[in-house]
Length: 591
Image 1 (cartoon, one colour):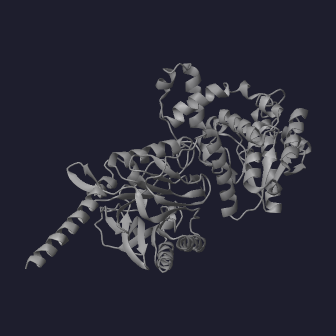
Image 2 (image 1 turned 30 degrees about the vertical axis):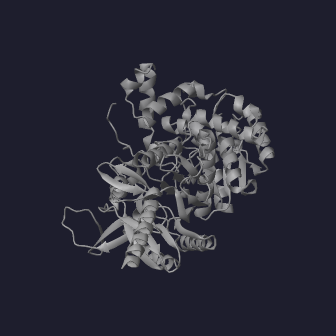
Image 3 (image 1 turned 180 degrees about the vertical axis):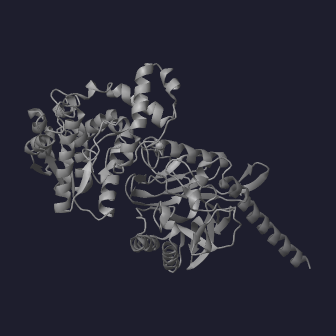
């Protein structure tokens, strides 16, 4: 009896020591009135942040990429691999979501991926859908009389099974986002047990909003938050995004894993730049920017890492990526650009050469009756500095033929913008002829400042398949050109191009300043009006002359019909023309 009591005492002592070690190995933390135990940063398994470049509708390509990286993760002993928002379909699929075949193919690919998850966990974005009868007041997507409910979803897979699905709760419906048109919001904020962790999974916007699903997941005991995202780039967005995620981690005292998409999709550019933040809000791992990455992490306690944020570099890299993906994803290999000897066409050509290789870029030098000798020399020097292909096609004969045909109809009329635009339209026709004959894509070269106030010619210099710098203000054009020269450590874009006064060269001694204020002044006003949404009165209160502000705003309104007919431009500013700024053409509102 004595021996049995002694044995029981020893067992109790051992058990107490084990419990004490468990408690010491955890740090008690209280979130509101709900206490829970937050683990230390060291994980017992590896995770991989797989920021991939998905293409909308390329189900086979996206499937191969995802499965290939799952297999890579297995070889590197990764236990959990995470892919971006809507990685299977690409983002944003827009009205393809009204096509039931598109939805079904997305589900087939998810099934294929599920079969590849033996021995590994996978989180991947897809579109979930199901049939449900709704009242007339409910929003839904209808196919042949059947009602389908769509969700922007993440699927958690493991060992060839679906562990759970997570639906995006907060659907963005501003700027370029239109998710309420397609999706129903999620209502649950589940937490999943995985390898001794409790994982809360959320999707993009759910990280950005106050009172986010993350807080509910923390209350349910989440020890790690994972957010999958398709967050488009604009100048300054990365710093803002990093700040928001750091706050979520520090406020909730929980590590945050953020996986963002990378690549160009139409006018949108996704920069990647995935993050892992410690529970103190420190970035301990950062994915590459503007390229795919497979970032493996095995600790939430790593040293803080940082990356210098050079906005000019970010914009340049974004434009290169956007141009590359737009050209290649749409089945083109080569492009053609009109080279005027000016700064805008020079920067466009440089971006194209970096994106596609100079051997895939053709520059057309099209001198006219008012082209200066210096501009032709500058354009030729740019060709020599880059190694791009080029042709010289004079428009003088064609221009004089046009004028001769129109002479009797225009008799008695002074030469004006009509004759100027004829030159631009001849050049547009020549560019399109080369594009048709040789299977090229025309890149137009207008900048945001010009497009804003209509300083461009419909069916002329606006002609093209992609407007590479259409969201780049003129003052930033110069910054980008000087940045490129600095990283190349030589004047690829010559100093003559950088120094000479901007001119369309469509009449004798023409300068942009004949018709516009300085670009420094113009860009300040455009920034206040377009990017910041200030009114006429508010801009004048900033110190600008009233008549100048009124004239510029009037030009912006009157040029809306032009912009509606322009090729899409790569978005690099908070408010881009087109899908990001949906203004009516017919507009009598006085602001």
